[in-house]
Image (tube, rainbow, N blue to C red; front, side, top):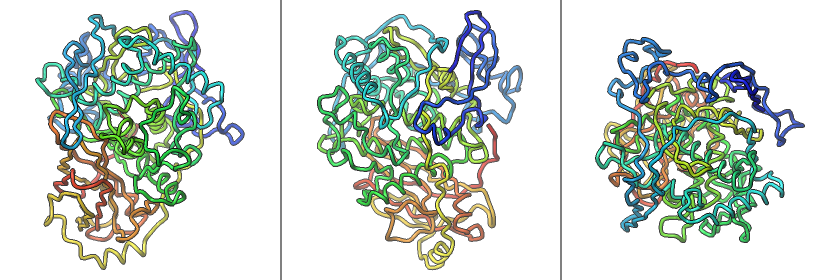
Length: 586
Ligand code: C2O
């Protein structure tokens, strides 16, 4: 627990990327208890906003928050060396700026052909305060929703009930809070000064930071409504077999946590299907889920952006590309809970309505937990590159109403450390951590030898309305660190899309993901962007798969793309294999 002395010099605790400082597992006797990490203590003197904790480019940022590009380019006056410059030289843009609330417009939900206009704009306030993280006096420990005590459930229920009873125009009201998601995700805000180009907080590197701030204020509002400064949101522990059903507290029709608009076939005891394979075998689904978690947290990523999402800067089109976690488990949970009886799979199945289901915040608390685990707990021999140091990432900003209904401006750089924000998670075992799929060597060879799949160069672009199988040449013969790139993906943003990628796999069992041949996924939740189509690309790391299948020495691999959604809606422009960029450590 962090503590603060009254002087301006502060003894406080800070997590570090050294995984030993936040133990990953509690001792067996401490499983499922609120066991605390063993933090490292540091002393610092400052105003309490913890700036000293950031290894960043603060020397390069002027009082307007603008980055002095000269300093960056010449490597002066900052911690940036050339190695930390954005890899794309055209990328010297500006960070995404917060929306102007007085220019908030109509949000749109497009449901296939039908267009639905929604007003989800917040109340307008002229005064905006630059938010400074308050000193951490009480640590809020987010509990696993399946393990929460009856007292906790009572308190949480009361807090949500009070939030629902606030006046409709109070920005802390339940619907107002739900509308935050709609406005930031369904085209109500334009990028200031960029014409009609939307702000979109999904499918890019803004995904984790935006949702972290969103939940941060949501949690503080709830705490304030029940007078409990330690109140913490529960997380839906869908990455652990013990948490793979909708948590019981959300399915009591008398509770404020209940929402009718959910898929009735997926109420408990249905096991959450993170692969959306539709498999009816619960044991297979659990094995798939653990494999997916291993793949999206560890096996499939080479760089921080592979996990976090692609760069998104001022003037860019929305939806440049989601990271592995966003497009994987995150998207599947939305789709799995959304109600097929509703036109647009409301509530969780569509971004405009997702925040109307209290379960959304519980789902996203676990998404946020995944970011924390990835940042601070995954060993650096498994995940070497954990930081994005690009100033257009660190200086991107949003606005929210805080627990006192004041409009505040927040930046990505201030949300990189959950402990500094005053909350942590109950320690729960991570059964996916060592769930590397078993080797599949002989089988992979036979499939490759007998494949008559066409070469990738001959068939793209391809619309994925059925299974597609192609041969793709390796970048380099022999042992190599390589990435598979699905490029020029054009996706209809109004539809649920999901495509799984397999390598040297047979035809008939693609509902089994717990095997070396499963490489990863592309998926999206329906939403709206400036145009109905988004252009994106994803990369999946092949290195471990080559080892697990012993196919380093082949010239080509056979890639199978398996759509899980109905119909088309996604076109892939091409597939190629590239050598992985050199490793950064962080
Ligand atoms: Cu902003 Cu899970 O969505």
